[in-house]
Amino acid sequence: MDAPRFPDWIDDAPEAVDSDLCQSCGACCSTSAEWPRFTLEDDADLDSIPAEYVAADQSGMRCEGERCSALTGEIGKGTACGVYAVRPLVCRACLPGDPECLMARERHGLPWPPEPAELR
Ligand code: SF4
Ligand code: SF4
Image 1 (cartoon, protein in one colour):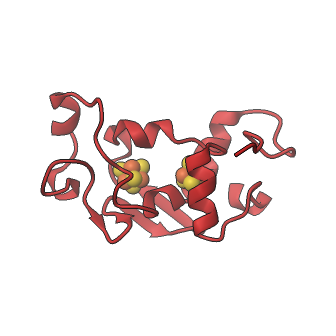
Image 2 (cartoon, rainbow, N blue to C red):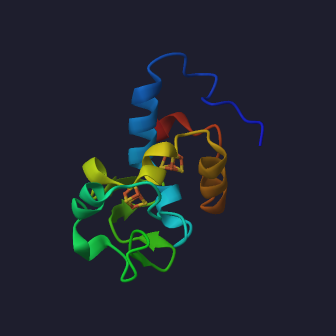
């Protein structure tokens, strides 16, 4: 999908955009139980994730339906990752404007570019 990495009305501080937008969004954390899977994490990385959030087969994050069990809050309003500092690599790699992001946001009826209100 050929979409801009960031909306036109944002011309600086992409890190802040990532952080602020994702805190209001959370769509990619609640789109597929297949998504928050472990990939190249080492044993120390995996041990740092609280067991209550890990799938029984150890393949990735435990999900409730399509929603990661570590996600709190309401999609598109205000969300947080309960294991942010130790979240899987796939979660770190997904950034606003990425194809996975756009797919997840569309699934939840969230527009791209995002509304300015999502960054407040
Ligand atoms: S879907 Fe995009 S904007 Fe929303 S939390 Fe994921 S990366 Fe951030
Ligand atoms: S571990 Fe955190 S960032 Fe990754 S899917 Fe779950 S709630 Fe989202």
